[in-house]
Image (cartoon, rainbow, N blue to C red; front, side, top):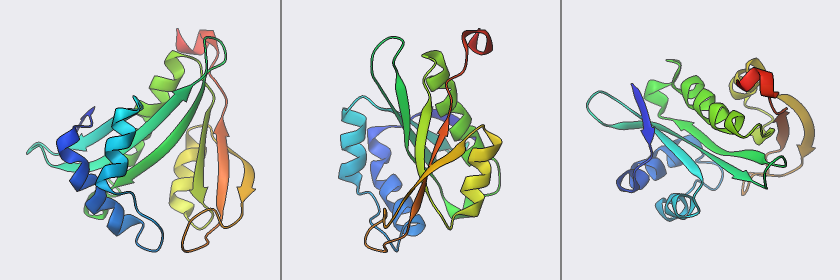
Amino acid sequence: MKLAKLRRKDVDRCAEIEKVLFAGDDPWSARAFLSELDSGAYYLGAYTPEDVLIGYAGLAVVGGRGEYEASVHTIGVDPAHQGKGIGTALLRALLARADEVRAPVFLEVRTDNDRAQELYRRHGFEQIGLRKRYYHPSGADAYTMMRPAVSKQEVG
């Protein structure tokens, strides 16, 4: 598996994976992924040796020097490839990008997604809030989680 910049030609595959992962909610469309890429957000794909997209992740960084904040917009891995460290590799790559500008990182995760919550906790995230009925149309709740910015010594 290799990580690389998410390619525009892979947005249809992203949307396919979304439909499987988030069937009870509002999965992102190919158009939504294109919009994210056009926004300048940092998006990565996880690819097999045969160059097939099996996972993706996106991070937005906002603010100015010394005041940056980052937000994980999405992480998804094809269910046939879950449990192989792909989600971990994608998350670590996003965090490395946030660490370059020493930004705290925020995200939302379903309250019933224990596996994802544990991944985030292992990488320094803590639950800081609850968003009732955050996901639509299911009405599922989400935890807001945050990982503090790394210090200059931790980056360097």
